[in-house]
Amino acid sequence: MFSYRFFFVTLGKFYNMTFEKTYEINNNELTIKLPEKFKSVKKVRVIIEEVENERSKKIQLLKKALTDPLFNADLEEIRNDFQYSDKEAI
Image 1 (spheres, rainbow, N blue to C red):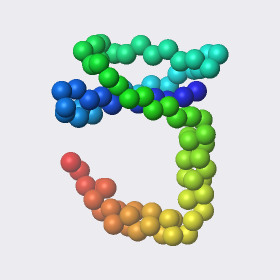
Image 2 (image 1 turned 90 degrees about the vertical axis):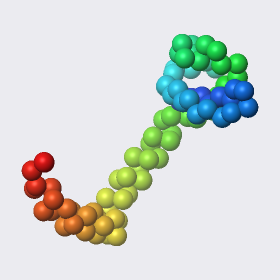
Image 3 (image 1 turned 180 degrees about the vertical axis):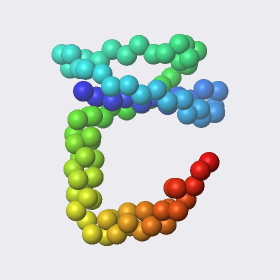
Image 4 (image 1 turned 135 degrees about the vertical axis):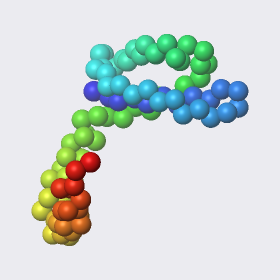
């Protein structure tokens, strides 16, 4: 699976309209149907990144962080800082 992101340029101005969606690849081809809001757009930039590997790397880093003493100390400090405000009624 791949993820893609669109950015486009019109009339010399940069508009950051982003559309992101994950697709299955069939026979090394990808067909993208753009949302209606892109109808007047003449040019888009497509960035393709492999989803599975990136997600797996992030999950591994999060698991590693849980065993990091400095990370855990930071979490504990944040818990202590907010222990009273978390109990306040809004």
